[in-house]
Image 1 (cartoon, helix red, strand yellow):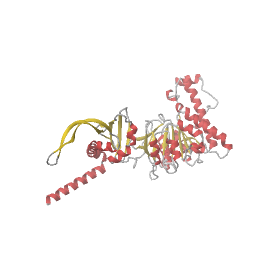
Image 2 (cartoon, one colour):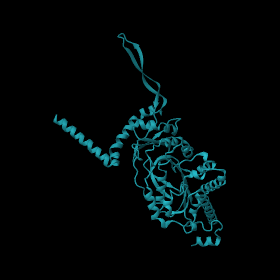
Image 3 (cartoon, helix red, strand yellow):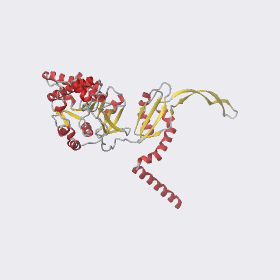
Image 4 (spheres, one colour):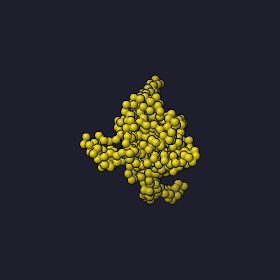
Length: 449
């Protein structure tokens, strides 16, 4: 009896040690204990899971079968083995699962007639079968499918925002894969950020300001709430428009600035400002637009011309601004096709899409509708208790669930004041852009400087 008690006490101590190890250093516990057991379980259950999820195929195989023969005098039925072709369920070939930071991934070889969409449709069933948080499906090449499983949701808790190390690149949060969520304006120049009140839309803008404030860029604000959102960040903003009339004037300045840089690149034989020498390269401009719908709403016909002018100028910046260092980050609570064709045309130019929790399906459809339909379903399932969670169309051509770091208004205001000395003067930036062009003599002098 004493030996049994000591054995139970030893087992209890072992379980406590494993629990403490898992709580204090999950990564080493996962690699040494969790992953080997999970890999064995996944490989051992793959045939049953594939059959239950409808990922198997019937194939003819030569097999030994038992067939009834003559009946003996004792009443027993004699059976005999026959070698014949039978239909069997064949599962896709699975390689050995590999560990990741938050789970594991495994490569499969698809069967005849299968496509990655077949596995994507079965992703939720696979996640429930293996009791994991989620499974994402990708296809690196024809005939291969990669299943990436996350054991736990990495978006439950996110760290503090790290410092940005590259120009026009800001780490604003974390993806569901555990990788950092990076907004790179050099790769994806224009973004649409949709979200209802308290969904995390403004928090993402704060994170963007904190990340861009220490960089040598010009920040321009369009705050259609009368300036209540962006006015506290005024020390770091080169220009701020708080109504539609001011927005029209500021957009005219951006178009004139773009045309001026267009002439500079043409005379220098460069396709964009990044091919210019650093001595004459213009300062990049990031335009932050809050409440995009206010630029298109029309109370009466007297505003029609103003709205048309605003829409044309904003669309022109979106179409041509990338090459000349002008980038857009447009935010709105509601973005629908009922706002007019200008919004639809602008959306087509914004390859970056971010959809937080929204109040109406139309906004989610407008933001993500031309992407994977599964992204639309996932966007509509974002809970109100998870502010900051969004569906992101990433620069790798796929969509992910992501969550932005929490950045308070106080932190964004502090960053704006701290780096106020880096704010370019808007008057100096647009000086001469409306009525003057750089001549060849000045250009040669700058190129040889």
